[in-house]
Amino acid sequence: MGQPDHGIHYMTDRKIIEYMIRKARLRPDDIVLDIGAGKGALTLEINRQCDCIAVDIEKEHADFLASHSLKRTSILHENILTALPKLNFNKIIANIPYSISEPLFYALCKKEFDLAIMTIGERFFHVLSTDTKTGIILRSQNDVSYLRSIPKTAFSPPPRVRSCIIELRKKTRQDETDRLIRHLLFLDDKKIKNALDTLFEKQRSRREIASLSQQSPFLGKKLTALSNKETIQLVALLKELH
Image (cartoon, rainbow, N blue to C red; front, side):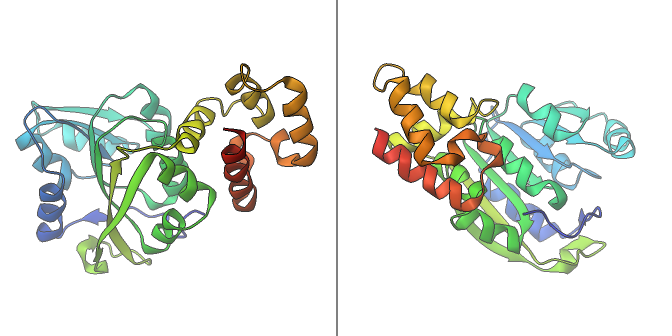
């Protein structure tokens, strides 16, 4: 479920910026990812405390940040969705582009990081906190917390949608279903039934998986193609299988 507002909205409220930085509890050895760095409101603050990777698809933003000669910041003029797999970081502080919310959070499920403090649309928080495909998959890997709402006046220009700040924290306790979902994430180029063959090759025969596929037609799809209802059914099936 994407956001309806596709414009660029710069974070301008100093109190909100300081709040996000404070919530991230930065240490000198942290490596922080700033997604959609824009004019560097967050990047400049992160750079004062630790290393930063600032990613923005707009060349003018990347050039603007480069003009500051930030010694602790790597600036990437790239699409975050294609850049993300190759990046190494342990924290995220970002005012993300709302238009890529769903694919971005799906991609983040595949990354190892300790903590993320991010602005998102209020409606998208509902997606993350309920039984939607993105919400189920994200919460299998991370604890998701709502921190606070943000007034539209915290941005320039003000967005049409209401915004909030959330925290993602890597789950310290994962059950077997959570671990299986993570494995499926990394096999999402395969149909789910083929991925299950790989995951359960020692415990379940191909005949058993084929039988399950007949009972559950959604297993013939890739993970990315599942509906919300099919994702709920998949979780129930994974609980049965282990």
